[in-house]
Length: 123
Image (cartoon, rainbow, N blue to C red):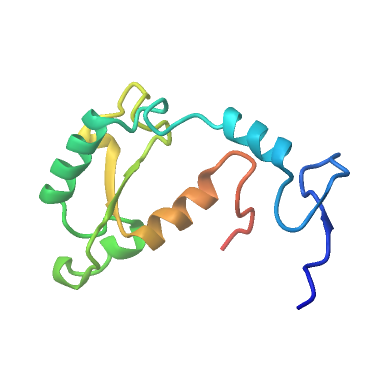
């Protein structure tokens, strides 16, 4: 059986050849740079706030779903911070700053709102 062709590590400026993905040193470096979810405020306190909010607001509250009658809205599974600052922001656990959303709607919203954008396309 033929082995996989070597490819260049996708990390900018790294010339190392790998069989797939990043080379070992680049992978290790990338993992060290990424902070944990708890470091960003997504800890036990956030889990409790999120659960309580979803119990009180079981249906998606995105702009698209708000136009629909409540019982026709899809079930919410995630909580969005309207100010985009997350749980460490000044209003991180303030219910007036939260918005229940489906996974798909939250991902789409986040992609639009991220600085530099995951998705710069305007709809």
